[in-house]
Image (spheres, helix red, strand yellow):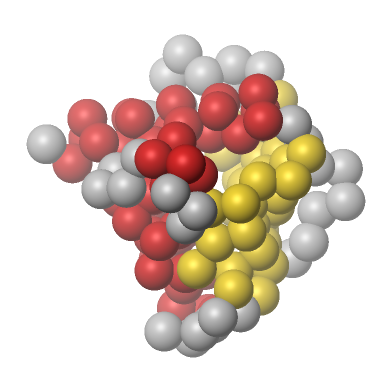
Length: 113
């Protein structure tokens, strides 16, 4: 997959999720490694989610992950905690904020069932 395909698919999956009950602020930069290498960010602000195709310098954490595994996380088929513990996902910055992203993934799992 190209960077553009990974970004478009990730954005589609993330924006399809319900954000009800998700408050506060969360800014995650996603650094895609390997095939389709590039960076984009996801921001949760005031109950709305934004996904943009560039680096975000006021971020809480950075995910370093392959495009394939990030899409699996967005689909809800790969648990972010499991991805982290098995080395498929590296996190720089706030682990607590990274775990908040897991809430979005959990909502994806519920929506895909």
